Amino acid sequence: MKPLLIVGLGNPLMGDDGVGALVVESLAGQVDADVLIGGTDLLRYAGEMEGRERVILIDAIESDVAGEITVTDEDPPEALSAGAHTLSAPAAVRLLRPLMPEVRFTWLLAGVGSARAGEGLSPELAAAVPRLRERVMELAATHRRAA
Image (cartoon, rainbow, N blue to C red; front, top):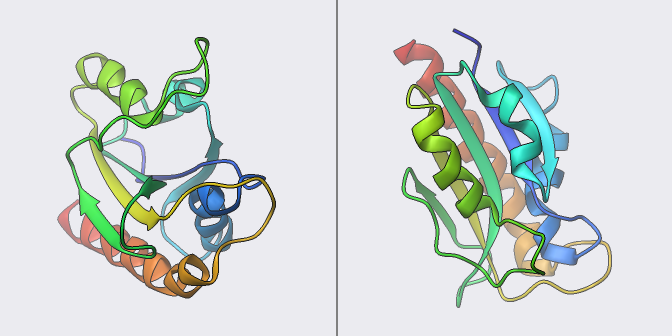
């Protein structure tokens, strides 16, 4: 079985939407897991996920509480699609689950008010990044102990 995989999702050029990529980038070499910046096309990395026991997905989600952190194995609700040729991360995971029944997908979701064009995180989400990193490290340690 391949080691734990942590995937940071989102577009760093869209403000808070890039929080997953930012957190994963900061974890490289700091956690006992494979890390991957998945961008906005999760299906592109299906081969990387295959054969894993667990994949942790870090993503932004619209919320009334910016910086709120949610950990769940349930897929988050659909966001508005950016176009006819795009597939959201939750939709991609729903396609992958029956193809990879051995993989446990866990979402680490960071609440954002809205995505906006431009680099950098909102003050609320920037303040939540250390808590996001800590939660990822806890999940990785728990996974390692269970393995």
